[in-house]
Image (tube, rainbow, N blue to C red; front, side, top):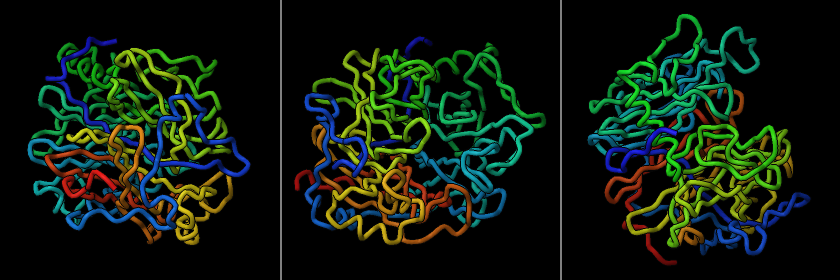
Length: 457
């Protein structure tokens, strides 16, 4: 494990999240947490629950602006997903995954736009291609196409600030588990700087694609080790995409996130990915949430968030437990506000639940075919919500961030109708900036004036 660095010189902005409440799915394992367990402490209880109505809209001062519009132009790409956001030298920086035709396929890379006016306008402008932050490390391929080279897929895994330098972190590999980490510098003027592999040796890439220095180069070793130390901080305030599958057993995990053998899978055998950054409860316990990714064969989902905790400053983490918080098996975002409240960004609607006593019936008639496939596969990503908790356990306030009633403009594998999802956020002063994808082809930003969000129902 690389040596730890002081919080004064390291700051990692990694965005993912939290979620909602629950009843068991018909015919599925019960989703309610066992009495006395950690998971039983986490609830979703906004006042509109059970009214048959969606959460109320955000306050009138909220702004929505389009950051990026996908297109068939190869420089733009038909797919845009997993956005992240940071504030750096007066600029909002938004990054995302991009692919010409598909999602999570070879050739996927990172793109970026920036704003100098709080997200009102963007550079490059929307009628121009975005800034290529991370070039493809292999040939662009469609899903199912025969692969003759390395499957170099890049996932947009966060933004790290080290000694006043901002870096986008890409997880590069063939799946959601551990890959090679690539750090791409974003300079104060919003252009790209150095690119470094966070590994002793540079991983292999396809012939003809860029090659970058790695830790073995003594000029870069101190910086790359500092980045790794922050990414693998045992408090896990930051978290890379991660897969809980284990080849042998489900023992409690050891510290660190860069080893694919950690942490263990939950007792019910569900596969978990995309852990959130951790936040601290009032008693000092660190907690983090996980996204359910179905069982080992991805045939059965329970549509709940899972939670794990640490009582030793992240030296060890408990095996994740299933909570009663519903979530539509997509990335969630979480963080702590200056007044101590914890925010949660997620899609709480799941097929088969009746949390909203009629709201699902309002949503699902126009859901995509995948959302109507039955008990084991589906819910609605048409609604993205912001929830707040006073104690980090009970999320008892909720607002609707965005609903989506339009279908994708460009056909593509894994595109779901009415998909507003994969949120991330950063706070600047009294404003919470939330980014998310629309139908996996556009990126939008929502600016929320936090003083307008009341503390009590």
